[in-house]
Length: 69
Image (cartoon, rainbow, N blue to C red; front, side):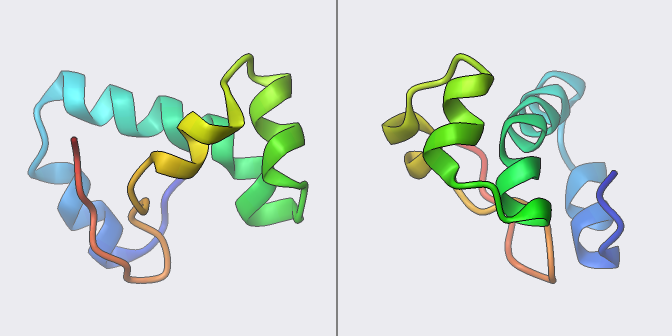
C-alpha cells in the first residue's frame, strides 16, 4: 500500500485504469523497493523483463513525482 501523502494525492488524480497499472507495477517492484531484493530477481519472479522494470517511471513513494506513460 502506498502511504506517502504525495503519492496518495497523485494516485487520486489518475483514472481507474491508470491507477491499476501503477499498482500492478508497484506489486512487481515492491520486493525491490521495500525488501532490497535485486530488481532482476523481483522482475523475473513476476514474469517481467528486467529492462522493462528499469524503464518504468518512479512510483509515488517518498514524495517522488508520479509519471504515467
